[in-house]
Image (cartoon, rainbow, N blue to C red):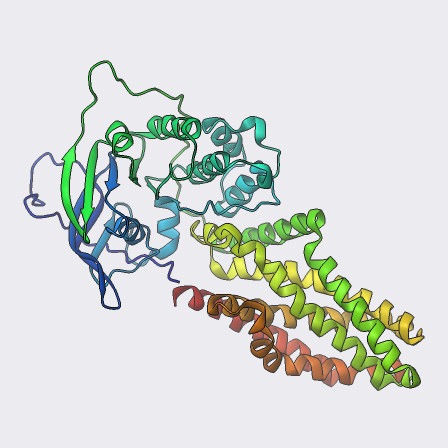
Length: 491
């Protein structure tokens, strides 16, 4: 999937009949110049020229497959054009996803929310990642009529409430452009009307582009209706409000101050803030659901019983104890990684974070640290399980050294495991492919762990050579996987 827009700082290219030198022309928010998109042999869009003026509301209509979602994807940057150029006002060449994150607010079919977090917590997470004051959260909750449900888990929300909360997520940073892909789809009549009133209240303050099959709704909400057919703009006409059918007004939240230039050192601060926000989010979700740690503990406990019975005659052999311990930790990691990343893919929550323009490396590192924390706890529990079922209290006596060894191993396993989990998920095979991708890459961690425990049990000290191997592995893999994670998103 690609989440990178094709930005241009060149002058906007107007469609035919609307030259740049027209006097009095309002500023353009969005311009597409001869944009085409091809998926293999299928031509989804064919040389589209389009100019959308700032502050206008445009509805995209047309049959399924006409190109509405593709056109929105090209504007948002989640789809790259096969040819042509997309220009957004305010974007500078090279700004990339960070500029897009400031300028755009994108509502997809999926609402990009975390079910285990409350409505307020979801918005606070996005506000923190963006570096916005948390006071904005209450303001946008009021704007979408969700203040009474702010402290309920999103899992308890209706579909209409989820849509409105997702819209609130977009409004946090007051984006210049709102892109809404079928915002009324799947809603009952009352929810559609409530959402329509909210969208109406945003008109004029934002440039809004939304797709819909509801032609009366398009005419009621939009200044301009574009009809797409076979990848082309078949019709482009303005709309008018009929006498006696004035659009309902919705109280608007106050405009925040414009974005100020980032102060010196803000990039480093923003990176650390994003890492901390993702780590805190994972710890909060796990403290409520315990889905990751419980699953890992159950598997570790089962394996401890089986291995304890199988190797009872060799229970006091340090090599056997070490092997059993690392089997438990490895299988717990394989099982837990997939579950830990499920929350990121469910409802496209990870993409929602990436659309903020936050550094993907910071998002990934925060996720790695959260999952490593769970694995570290389960690994310590595995020490107790091995001691219990093997009747080997020596492991508990070596606990101080084991703490350092397990912490380094958990970090390395999770750094590599997180990336391979994402790769396995993209392949469509999920947990089936994960062991094949992960195990060859973590051989140094397992070798260091298996070799270090017997030395620790016999001498009371960790082998410095293996410690250096683990440290070098962790640093190298953290750097490599965070960099490759960003590259994977572009692929």
